[in-house]
Length: 177
Image (cartoon, rainbow, N blue to C red):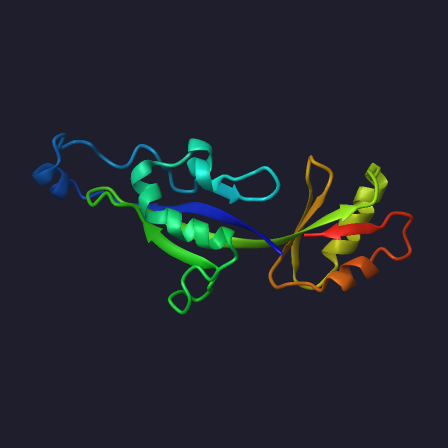
């Protein structure tokens, strides 16, 4: 099983009374860096390692200070906040800015990588997608530009059952990460 982390900005707050009292620019306003609905995906598969580059520089340093530990936990496949949230794969956290905090949903995304014995043509790729999407607990299937498929799941799927789906095909699964 592999893991990604999806970071979503779900809210922003502004406390003008606190800014007026404590901030050098009393009209600083809401956080200019993030916007409600922004989404960021972090991954650590193959050569990708978004964690060590703060999402390729896409994150504010103050926010990163607060959310990075949860992102790291998700990328390692851990329970982000066991027993605190309704779903151990999700954490709600905010940045350090007390006058204009940004609230994030941090979510572990579970997936498997399927590697086939050869490059597949478009028809064969469609066969893979069609067969995999019918499997229980599969939420999405994507073909990756590097030639493998990412199978997103709610719960783990047995590797042998994935391989059995292609026993009648000319192409075979040669690796599952």
